[in-house]
Length: 342
Ligand code: UFG
Image (cartoon, rainbow, N blue to C red; front, side, top):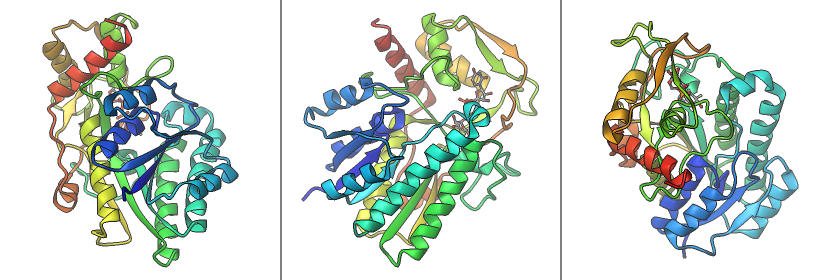
C-alpha cells in the first residue's frame, strides 16, 4: 500500500514542487491549502506534470482546529509536511499578531490532530533565519540559534521548539524532522510550476525575473559596501527541485524507521556562497538578457553572509543539491516567460 503524505500549503511555491517529487517517488499525497497567498496555478501545474488529474485537494484553513481534525479522520495520513504559514519578513514586523496567530495556531492544530489520531511523522519547514547573523560560516546544525530579528523568524524558532517538546512528550507517537532551508530559488524544468509572488516581490530572484521581463523597471541591489569580496551579501541559493527532493528523503527516513533520534534537524543548502552581484551576472549570462539594476542602500535586517554546511543531510539522508546556479536561473527565467505567455 502506498504511504500517504499530507502537504499543508501544498499549492504554494515549495509545496507544489514537493508534491511533484513525492508523487514521482511513489507516495500518495493529499494537498491542503486555503489559497490565502496563491491561486490554483501551481496546483493545476502539478496535476499536469504528474498526470494526476484526481489529485486530492482540500480547501481549508489550518487555523480551524475542527477542519484539521476532520482531515486527519478522513485520510490515513502517514506523514505530514507543514508549509502552511505566512512568510514575508517585513509584513511580519508590521503585523506581528497576525503572524504569531497564523503560524503558531496552524502548527499547533496539526500536532493536536496528529496526536488525537494515533500519532504521525511530522516534517516542519524551518529556515536558515533561525541562525540570525552567524558568528561563523558555513553554519552547521550545531551553530547557535540567534534571537530572531522579526516575528516571522521568531515563529520559525518557536515552531521548532514546539515540535521538539511535542515529540519528546509523545512517548513515540510523534516523530519530527526540522528542515532548515537556505534560499530556495528557481522553478520546475517543465516551467509549469514556480514562484508566484503577489504584488512587488520581496525576494531577489522573482524581482530579477520580473525586471528582465519588463514588469519592474529596475532591480535595486541592497548594499554594495558589505565586508564581502564584491561588497554584496552572500547567500546559499538552493534549487527548488533539489530542495523538494530533500523532503522525499526526509519522509522516507521517517517512514522507513531510519531516524537516529525522535526529532532531527538538517540544513538544506548547497554549501556554496553566491553574492547578489554574482547571481545577477549569472542570470544575465545564462539567459542572454541585460538586467537593469542599480546599487541602493542596505536593506534593514539583512545579514552579511550565510551559507550552509549541508554535510549532515548529505551523509545521513543521502541527499545532495545537484543543480548548478546557471541551470536554476534558466529555469526561473523559463517560468517567468511561461507566465508572460512568451
Ligand atoms: N536583494 C536585493 N534586491 C532585492 C531583493 C533582495 O539586493 O530586490 C538581496 C538581499 O538584500 C539579500 C539577497 O538579495 O542580500 C537575498 O534576499 P532575499 O530576500 O531573496 O532572501 P533573504 O536571504 O533575505 O531571505 C530568505 C528567505 C526568508 C528567510 C531568510 C533568512 O526569503 O524567508 O532567507 O533565512 F527568512
